[in-house]
Picture 1: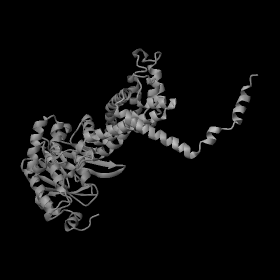
Picture 2 (picture 1 turned 90 degrees about the horizontal axis):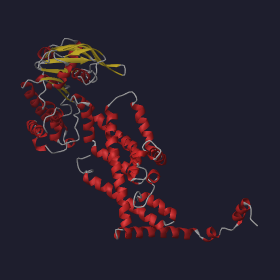
Picture 3 (picture 1 turned 180 degrees about the vertical axis):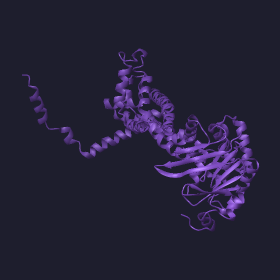
Picture 4 (picture 1 turned 135 degrees about the vertical axis):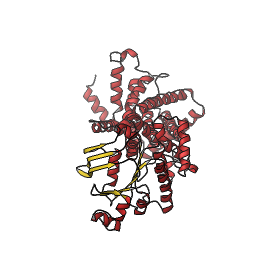
Length: 266
Length: 236
C-alpha cells in the first residue's frame, strides 16, 4: 500500500540517526584532518607530476584573470586619477557609487552578463556566452570598482602633495593624470593586486557565464566547486591549495618585478 | 617677452568666507628682488600664490603686461616645504622641461647641468625624497629655474635651514637675479631680507602695509607696526 507523502516524512523523522550518533566529534575531526592531509598530498602529486588537466585549468585561470586585470586596470586607474584631479558636479556621488560597487554581488553580475550575452540578449550575436571572453567580461565588471576605489584613495593623498606644484608648473589635466599614475605606480600596484585577488578567487559569475565546460571554460575555482559537489573533498582541497599557491606566486612575482619595499622606493 | 608691470587692483583671496589676502593694490616693475615680510599668518604665502595665480581671485583684478596664459609660462614657484616628486633627482629637475615637450635626452642633459650648478651633481640618481632639507630646497630651485623663468616666486625658501645651506641658496638666488630673473620672495629672516632686497613689502592682516625701497624701509619704516616688526616686537 502506497504511503502518503506526509507519512513518509514522519517515518524518516522517527528513525534513529545512526550515522550521526556513531561518529564521535573526535572521529569527525580525524576525517577532516585526513581530507586536509589528503588534499595536501594530492596537491603535491598533482604539481610534481604536472598533471595535464591541472596545468590546463591553472593556465586558463591565469589567462582569464590576468586579462581581466589588465583590462580593468586600463579602465580603472586613469578613471581614479581623473576623479582626483577633476572637479565636476556629480563627483562626490560618483565616488560614493564606486565605493558601494566594491561589494557588487558576483552572482548578480554573472546573471546580468548572461542576459546580455545570451542568444536573445543584445550582444547574443557575438556568441560569447560560455567562452573565456564572457568570463573576462564578468570579472572586469566585478573588479573595476574595487581597483578604482582603492586607487582613488592612494592617488588622493599623492594629489594632496603634488597639487600646488603641478598647478604652478602650468600642467594640463592630462599631464596631471600622467604624473599621478606614474609616481603613484607602486601604490596602484596594491589596488591592482586586490583586483587580482578578487578575480582569481571568483566563482559565482564565471560559473554562470562560463558554464564550467571541461577543456573550454573550466578554471580552478569552478573545478573546486565541481569536485566539492561530487564529494571528492581531497581533490577539491588539492585544487584549492594550488589556487592559493598560484595567487601568492603571482603576487610575489609582481612585487619583485616592481621593486616594491626596496630602499627609497614606493 | 614684456611681462611687467604686474598690476593688482583690489585683488582679494578668500577661503571659506575668511579673507586670506586683500584687498591688494600693487604695481611691480620688472627689475630687482622684492622681499615680502610680515608676522606669521599675515598673508605672505597667500599674496605670493595670488600673484603667481595658484589661487583664484575672489575679487578685484590682476594683470600682467602680456596675456596671463603667456605670463604663467614664464614663472616659477618654490614652496616653503618643497614638493619632491617620487622620482630621482635628475628626473625631478628635468620634469618641467618634459612638460613643454623637450626631448628626454636633452632634458636630462640640462637637468644634469642645473644639478651641478646647485650642488646636487653627486646625487643625480638618488630618490628625491631621500634628500636632506637643504638639498630638497636646492632641487626645488633647480627645478624652478630650469625653464629660465622671468619671474620666480619663493615662499620662505630658507626656513629651517642652517647658515651654510642658507648661504648656498642665497648664492643661487643672487646668480639667478644677476641673470635677469625677477625674484619675489617671502622670508622671516631679516638679515636675509637686508642682504637680498631691492624693495620690501610689509604685509599685515592680509594687506600690504608698506611697500618701500629696501634701504628706506630698513632705515625708517613708514608705520608704527613696521618699526615694531623690525625691532622684533610682537606685531598683531
